[in-house]
Length: 73
Image (cartoon, rainbow, N blue to C red; front, side):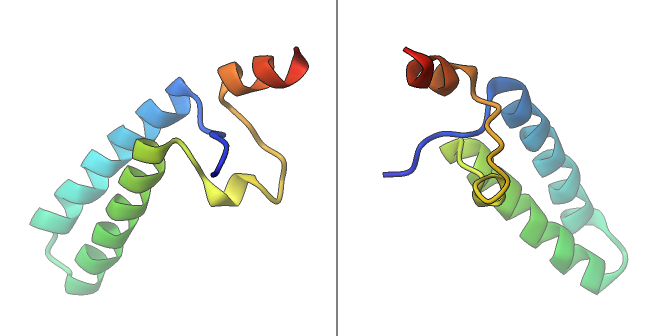
């Protein structure tokens, strides 16, 4: 359905950001900051899990090397 556009390094960075935002969401002192960080953690996790970032499509960004090689052949 959707072609992958998130590479391995990009996914790893997103997972680290998921952990950071998740910890801030759990242990933060300011409620609105907890809510925003929780939402960002969910988005980062979803994009890392499915290897698809909708914000990359309008700009034509693709960090997935495997997909780029398939298109060149």
